[in-house]
Image: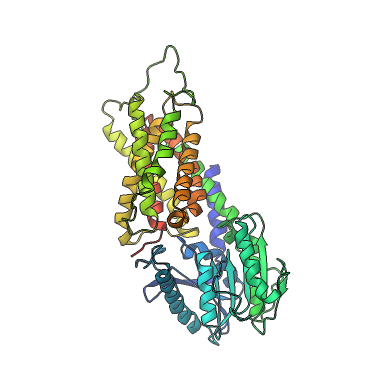
Length: 510
């Protein structure tokens, strides 16, 4: 009941953010787009074009769209090529970043023409996060005659140099999460310093809006690279900046879509509901005979215990993959991830066999029950998390071109989760086995990034997301195993969930 109440309350809060708005999906060329209009918006309502960052989608920028639209702006969001529901691949990728830049700028120009058509005077503003901050700055520089203001969240802007005019781009606000790397704040101060001088400070506005030289840097407290999108400071600063740029009066009590707490409550409710539902799964594993003497848990430091089963795959996987070519799937960095999961899992399976571990026995006549348990657990793992994410956070609906990628990613993640469930759910497994194995996997991934930073740097961005998924799906698997007494059920469900989310979020490349 608590879980259902939490889900209902959080959905109500999230849905009410769009109260009074006219929200319509559009197709601009081949790009999926959404237009947010305030109810009864006058023809002179200013227009803001919003762009998402790497591996994101337009859903990720919803808080900005609803905040601005509820305060009188017309807002346009869209999916870049290779991202979200955009079925066309992104040309270039990491191998040819100049080509990728041309693709993104061309998409931005197309959307700029669309946004200009919605504005009564042909002028609009732009807002972008992370990767898109560079794109919107370049777009605003190239179209200074129609782009009134720019907001860069987690900005890096190599196109702003010592020779760049002070009004290119016009009226720039930079917001950085206080927990983001210091280099982003340094970049923000460098960019603002082109107008303010070397003594630029965060929290002060420099320059003049009329001349297009207004500059401001803000640090959003307590948030990192993704949390900065949901920060009340980010929303309030972006709204106030747009109002000043378009000469609109500031709202005394503006609506701000600070949806982080509601999102957290929703995911907690979904997670909590899995606990009682998992108990309904059929038992498929053979009940273990009473142990006399009782089972003795392994010690981590024992060579015949769990230590080599964890340490060897963690160190060997990045070292083996380091010199090998890993670009074989049309999904940016997903091909390396599938290899890392797959090899790590196969090495762990080999170590389990070497150590003499016995695979858990299936109870007689329980094959149909096993299939039922796998289907039920998999549907919950994918849909119960995926549907809320798709509506409120980022795109999870796969275009047809991504369906083979989901299958490929699942085949890669399956050996890892089979091995990990077998290792950590064994009655004789060392205490804290699940936490230790996940910690070692993340360290292994970081080691791979350190060995090949040029190619794998962007994987560092998703490490916190993988950690969160390990926690959530670890609880799922614990409750599933308690009911089914067999590791295969949770292994298949978790492998498909991980493979699915990776395949639908990482950019599609040509």
